[in-house]
Image (cartoon, rainbow over all chains, first blue to last red):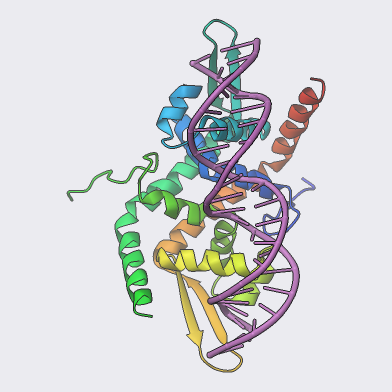
Length: 125
Length: 125
DNA sequence: CGGAATCCCTCCTGATACTG
DNA sequence: CAGTATCAGGAGGGATTCCG
């Protein structure tokens, strides 16, 4: 009960910053969101998160695993089988992320309209 | 009522992807979160979001403005005064973002611990 | 004050190929 | 299948300078 609001993401050197980037980053956010549907294998994730390369997916998953948000379980059979799943903390973050994403996609019509107007008025200049 | 779940962020070419990056990106997310406290001027934001350069802040704000999430109001006095504020959609997204960030910072103790263990076991290899 | 423009460099990113 | 290694490119991002 000593540590109240100890971590401020607005602070330059706050350790929460890199974690936030792992969670909200380009591929990290999508990987986290995809895993909310349940455990998944590597190539399964790769197919779900369209456009991601093996390299970036592996890299993002490692970051999330290091942050204690994702669990990686290896079965040393042949062919190799690796399953990724969410930790309790990871599940909560994924849910909040999907909530945000859901609202964003539902707002897309208005957003596309705004973009159109913005580009329009800039084209005149 | 025709368009149900039309925008899927997991799709490679979905127009929601770049918007998600604007919102959750390194500086965009912090700018959005900062503006949830109320309208702010440029250098005010610059101080709040520690570590951001003028260039990146201006760039992030422009992206958010283009997406219709942030409003930019100029007063052509001297010295120049520019105020940034959130649109209704921007406010909702900012709230969801702060919710996520709040949970993340509150989870930092456990996360730092996980990172420590991860690094530890990798050092042995 | 609030940017835009320029320079410059890092590191992110994506093919390709190879390993367990 | 699930990665790692390597390499080349292109964007991301900082410092500085200049304009309204």
